[in-house]
Length: 387
Image (cartoon, rainbow, N blue to C red):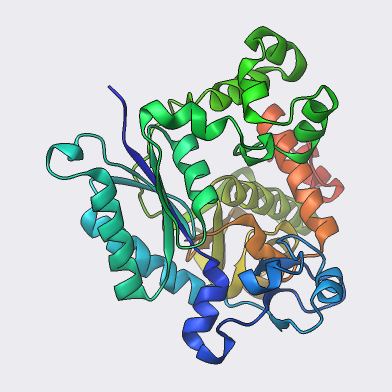
């Protein structure tokens, strides 16, 4: 039985939120992102895109292309609140839904066609979002997550596109392979060099050849090009916090070792945040002395999943906590106030070099494990074997 999967994506979400706050921004070229020298565009209005501006582009270059654009630093708290509102609207109407990011959702509507057409149901939901949240949402409806997402992308902005089972291949064939989700620039270049630039060409390649060329990813891309995707819609559960702590086998007063361990704990949490597309707004450090007295201190932070910011705050909080010069038996870190957030949100503050470094490290961690790459500052903790 074919499934009925809807993909919903809020149009120009960050910009739309800013327009709701300030209507004078409507229909103007807007750039959301870092204003400083090495700032990067996190999002931009459709009016700015006409000039060739794109997300992840250096802000300086974007302003050369569109000098009249208005730059707004970005307000993740505002965006998070609107995201929660839309999530509530979808939760109240949907059988099973997945929140893929701060502005992106999947709904499994399989079986609902017995009551009314899935397209009509999705259309009514999009209308409700517009009415109650003031935000325009595009959707694609098809047999799986990949095709529905591609349908959404082809129909934006304010698009509503259904691709029935019999039309999947005719819909996919003429598209560029760059439109396939998770197909990166490097893979696009590799396939282009052998003449594979359209989905139709990729779909007709022998799957064995694709596996030899790109490994497991080659088979996955071949399946997507043929409209095959068995991924389930994962029911959304709001995660409030993540934490990590260590109890020492021997109580210690070695501050260098403890701070190295804090780096290791924080970087592990930051990786988990990025992997699950989450950002934190509160960091808490906990210490327990040898007499079992336990103290915590927390601080609010602009929404982030960046190692260097969280490590700096963790060290500052530890310095504020550790006043008694007594042996410590436990240290811990918690990240709370979590929101779903696209990695580009960190572009508000982080330079592109830092973002590329995190992305490279995350790829290594996902492939080989979290402990493979460590900062030199973590060496005391590693050498101490976490005691």
